[in-house]
Figure (tube, rainbow, N blue to C red):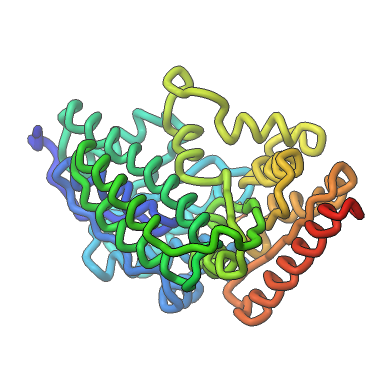
Length: 375
Ligand code: SF4
């Protein structure tokens, strides 16, 4: 391990689903130290909201809240993944840095602009926070972290299958959470392989009703909202308890293949490549955020014949407002039931659950009509 030039610093990243496990694996495998922000909570949201412009989108407020809490817990550097967004994402990085400066925090701010030089930019960031410049160590750390992404996404799918069929609500998720620790602790590919086998076995212990009438629903929308259970009000858990198996093409593996892994090392079509193919009849150019992916996910779900699709987006998100306005036109090309949910910090739990229940009833009725040849 070469630590000549760079001393290691305690670094943090915000929460977005299980991203912290992946980044923490990379940092720790290179001898660095990671401060994981406390699990996103109402306190995180209120901290972020207090120091954010009023009309900024929900993900911004949560990211800022995560950073503040992590710095209060000892983080000396924060990593912000940025991009030249057509929407407000392009301004996120500068605004968050300014907000942290205004609050008097001295944490080092690392703007990881993956769209600049992708791999090189990431290497530079890794070296600067871990102090490790050994390329073999870095390559090993990256491979382990990337493999964790694929394992975690696969576990999500297995969880979704069991959650929709379990006899006792919450059993599969309990097993999943227990298994997450094993994945987190795996410090080599061999250990990860063993942890993965154990994790799948643990979730599969859940007793399920194989004959339950289960609906298949695809989830799409703004990526942060889709992946972050706090901001989407644990939508997948809620749907699971209603007998709905969820699937999302928007996941960390898809992001990894699109944003990090060079094309010559990839197999098959990425989510973004598929997105441009399927969205073409409705949207010809990238309008920022995840609009292309959202539109294409609707077209893809229609072609697959799932029972319905739920689109989640934050209030005031420009790209997703555009997507939602294209959905009615798409309905003319298929009969896929779509529920568009716009969420923010004011969204009440009871109304949210009622909308999900009504949507599930609608999909069930439609499924029966289709089965009876009446729709
Ligand atoms: S995609 Fe939407 S939520 Fe995300 S940064 Fe852009 S405007 Fe905000």
